[in-house]
Image 1 (cartoon, chains in turn blue, green):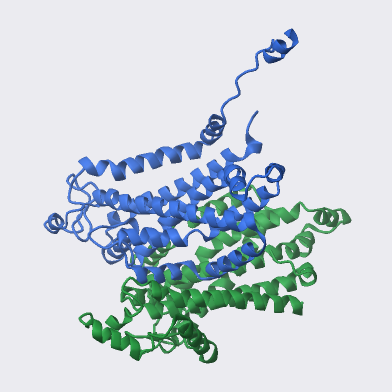
Image 2 (cartoon, rainbow over the protein chains, first blue to last red):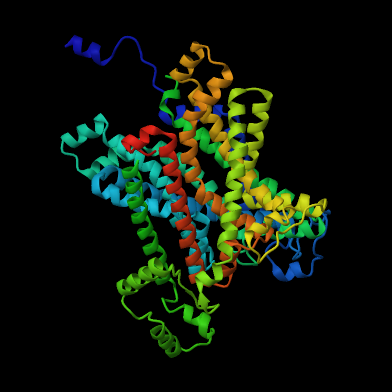
Amino acid sequence: MTVVTDLAAPAVAVAEPTPMWRQRARIFFSNKLATVSVIFLLVIIFGCYVVPLFYSTNQSNAALALMTPFNQAPSAAHWLGTDSSGYDELGRIFYGGGYSLTLGILAGFITIVVGTLYGMISGFFGGFTDTVMMRVLDAFLSIPYLFFLITLVSIFGRSTTFLIVVIGLTGWWGNARIIRGDAMLIRGLEYSQASKAMGGSKWHIIRRHVFPNSISNIVTVATFSVADAILFLSALGFLGLGIKLPETDWGTMLQSGTTALQSANYWWEVYPLAIVFILVVVAINYIGDALRDAFEVRLVER
Amino acid sequence: MLSFIVRRLIQSFVVLLIIIVITFSLPYLEPKGIYAPAYLALGTRATPMMVQAWGVAHGMDHPYLWRLGSYMWGLFTHFNLGYSFQAGRPVMGILRLYVPRTIWLALVSLILTCLIAVPLGIFQAQRRNTAFDYSATGVAFVLYAMPSFLLCSLVLDAFGFRAPHLPISPPSGVAPWLIFQDPKAFIMPVGCLVLLSVAGLSRFMRGTVLEVLVQDYVRTAKAKGCSSRRVLFKHAFRNAMGPIVTILGLSIPGLLGGALIIEDVFNYGGLGVETVNAALSSDVYVVLGITLLVSILTLLGNLLADVALGIVNPRIRIEGVTR
């Protein structure tokens, strides 16, 4: 009896293990660039979603914009000047950023959900299912992406909802490839095999083993997907196929801005936005890199 | 080698069939229905009756599979890419001039990219972690993070408008080989496309050469007493070629997408500009025709890359293992 109690309560107290998420967070935030990126993104998100509530010039009011002088250089009234329609440039950056970020994040979210489902089914079931699904994926990947995107936009139109759906339902091809590789790998590992031997159904194995163990890749890929979605949305905007006026997004703004820059050197209509835009994309990519490192089990200090 | 090529041909053909089915089926998803092009031909005030009659006249009331079959037949026998109901002529007729122009732009850029990126990557790998390597990596990183349209617009602004030395747009509506008559007009579009692709390819080349340089056969070659130049170009380079050829093949869709942006920025009349214009006027069948065409170009490019890979890497010829 005494032996049992001894076993249950060992004399030397074992330190409580650090929770997994805290280890991950420590690795993530030990990356200085990633920390700076997170702070920067939080500032931008605050700017895009909160600042417009109290920094209200004429960024969304077309009638008010018409009464403002066009293409004004930066001044006390308009900190970054006005654009070729008279909108306040700083307010417009926030306003357009709201659309760019919202669309990018939602579209990125759709790509990761669809890509994960497709990749998991393809990789886990293997065999004929996998062959067919991969050939279909090959076909999608052989269509130059920008052309395909333009095709869909010309069919479905350019409303905000359709843009999210179109980018979301076309951006998942690369993600599906990556997740498929994971699913194939995990399916063959001992714990999946053991679960199968004990009578676990296929969905049980996918839910309890394959999905939780590929979550690191899913999160990382999701981050990059958001950056890609923002970039492709801006490319559409630049080609004149983005959100319709008076609403706007960063790509559309850059298009009109570069026109103004080339015709009359109105630098304030391009450079501030360009810098913010590039930094946002770079920051998201840094965060993705750091997440990948944080999830890399081999790097965890034990 | 022959069986390898035949197998790849069959695979590509299956993929092509799937692409055709996708591009053919997309108009069925149109919110206004399959007869939507009627509004382009008849005007927006057409009555439902007129639209119905128009659809029947154009054979759009036939069953899906029947139409798919006749579409494929037209495509494979006379390369019929469809009909633009807005322009009132076949899509291929509209694109005839644009196809060689876009291929030309992409091909010249691809060749120049290889000529610049491959030596640059090798040089960087050889001198890794020196000031040169760091600065090249830094520039590549900035180019990589920048959206392509922004880079092109800024280049256009700097060299076309601020210091007006270069013509801002190549002559349009002429055959592509006129580059030899007015090469200055092509410097900026080609240069931008090269700049966009060099960033990625030189990074990749650097990584590949670094990976190859630590292999046993390279150490053996060094131990035999080969000069470092001979090791690099005879032993390392040949082995680094495989991944490079693969990545070149995979980069073709991106290259064509980049060409689309470049064409739009520099107003270089080609498939890209035509796509954007057709999309802006919702001429869906032109956009679909172009998309199918560039997909076929991509498949051809991938096929070429695979054959080249078989030539570069003898293991693939025998085992038939790709990627």
